[in-house]
Image (cartoon, rainbow, N blue to C red):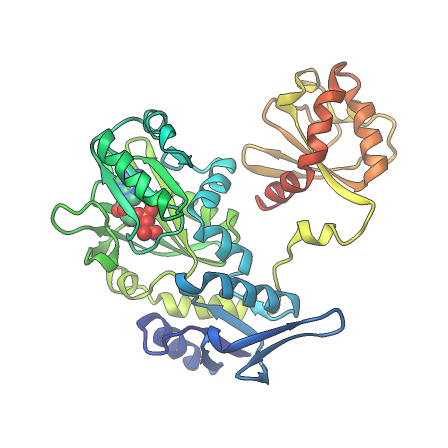
Length: 406
Ligand SMILES: Nc1ncnc2c1ncn2[C@@H]1O[C@H](COP(=O)(O)OP(=O)(O)O)[C@@H](O)[C@H]1O
Ligand SMILES: [Mg+2]
């Protein structure tokens, strides 16, 4: 396997460690600067050039810095397009770098996060603070890193001044519930390919409330509860990351996911946990590189005339309690291919399965047939049509998010 670490800093600890462990496995490895790539896009020919030359690699580990996220994502999308394996996809990086978007996906998938409000207008600050549990509250920019852009505010006046300044600077501003019991500490969990490989507790120094390693925080070993382990694995998964640093706060009622990092630093965690994380990453890539992730929602849109439609049972109370069979009685082959239930997917559900309030039906097939079938099925519910219109406009988004739960 020819492996490239996409990194601007060949001498950085994490980059060096990955190279070192790859060499131990006799992998042909190089560190390539993401900014030295150029892309060409055409219907006939899609190319990636490095320093003007065609590349000859099988797999990449992206270590994309925050300041070049946009470029990094474009580069990874192109790798995906030509079938070169990337340990983290462009999409995964894009989603996880936007705290607002990531919070929406995490919450939608039932992963607990601190209550978070998003405001665009200074007049909304007061209500937003109330919604997230009052003062003190955390105010952060959606695309910050290493603790920059994260603030604790104790009075309404201070909070408003800060939000105003951030909005003037054209930042997306989040107002977040302050998890007091976790003041100055958090847990970083390293998830590699669906498994937790290491974890550490990070503590801030002095009166600082942010526990980032880069703000001089200290690190120590920690044993994760099974609950925290499951949450961290799911958080990495729903954001589509093969390699992820999941940050957890220890709330009174259990772990909360704060954010998920797509290029987690290895220095602190290897020191604190004594785990060879770089080796775990290389091992995962050796196992995985021949199988690239597929963006199913994109794939399903390649054909005109077919689509994935979803129905949220909560909006159709009359269907609740019925069997699937009843819904699709006239169908030889049910267009239903999965039910999303309790943050899990039931594939090819049995006809006798009874529908519940929280279920989401996911159907796939020819759009016209599917619509007619579903409309007929939903006629059991008399006022169905007006509601159904809304599904059509949301269809693509719904299907994408549900599929990302896999
Ligand atoms: N809602 C919160 N409650 C308590 N502490 C928080 C909260 N949000 C952030 N922190 C602290 O601030 C640190 C940085 O916040 P985070 O959202 O992870 O931003 P960054 O991406 O800059 O690391 C966290 O590691 C945590 O210690
Ligand atoms: Mg963080």
